[in-house]
Length: 110
Image (spheres, rainbow, N blue to C red):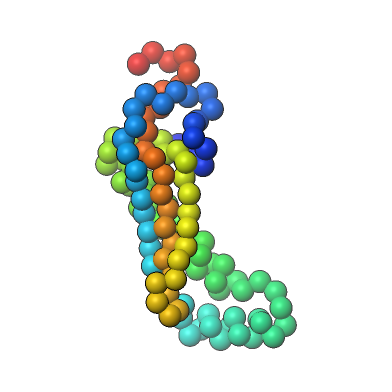
């Protein structure tokens, strides 16, 4: 599956648009990460626990979006975007979305 955040895939032609696809996950912070983050706030630096949480969430949302694209028969997703939002105290949603399409390599015979 080709995944790009542009409207087109260089070297390919979009032959069919399958539609909007999306994936999301909602994650809550845990007490261990909060304690570590609180200590890190005192001395400065990266909040590694939160970085790992967001990386894991982004992968999960992306995989769910790609599964939906695959179900539609797409072989690429264009215009991919990520967004986050707070849904409750201590919980956030990570949302991935894009347009599922069928692409063929330029010069290829369909």
